Length: 377
Image (cartoon, rainbow, N blue to C red):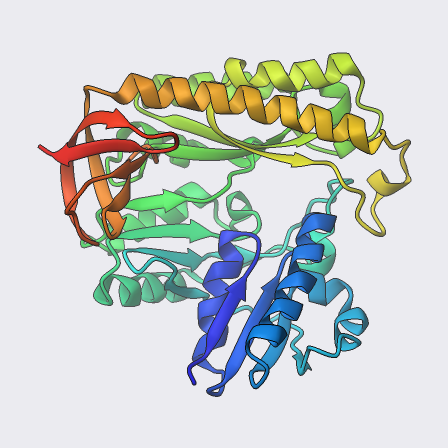
């Protein structure tokens, strides 16, 4: 019986799961948990119980952020054989294939900020950057193993010690065989000038940028203890688009934060258009234990759900319009799984008869509900 991993949450978790699998004995199933929302914790418990039902002989190891925060609760689950707490004081370079062609390489872990809704800093501790040599060597191993695209990931990669831009610049210079480099979620307030220069002039840096915006209302941003304003978000996107006209924008947004008025919610809704967001990750607010936001006046759950649904509907409409606009164009594409891949700007594409690792210009002939359809040009 081989080692398996069930991973919830962020790209960093997926990278860390591969590292954990490498050192686990046969017959182990690692459940790598997420604590970003109450729903993520519920899904972790559900995954553990389902795994025990389906594979009663497996050795189930629970780990990850939810486990870090509530180790005794997971030890009390009869389905769990072992609780593995991570030593984030000695972080490893977590690198491994998630989809084989695209590989995730961690550059840091932890966070120095104390957003009022978040528990991740409690689970992972302060920000700690991995040394450049270790990152370079991990990326080299992935490329030698067949990765055509590397994604730099972490909890707050823009807090990298010497700046994310200088790290990217050094990595691209050191790895001439690395043709495609992506960045995971970016804290907009920390984007440095070197990174802006790379956005403008480095074709190997893929032109999709996912921003941790969270809200589009200044009062709510202040109560979240975010360090940017609404105007900063809009100006940042305008600057990215001016530097790289083919750039696309994704964003994390929270609906129904405590004290959020209807006007504040509409400000977040309007941010979709003002920041030209085509890939929105919308989270209905859920209070997390031991956070300031959990002690603020809460909205009714039905109000939160309705605002999240409205935000998702508007985001889906914008995304659909973006995909429609790509029909009839030619886009560079990498196929990551059989017949499925993404453009450089991260639009999903289906190409009949293609295989993993295929790359090149693709003529977009149409689309399905959630993907473009094309043929290699």
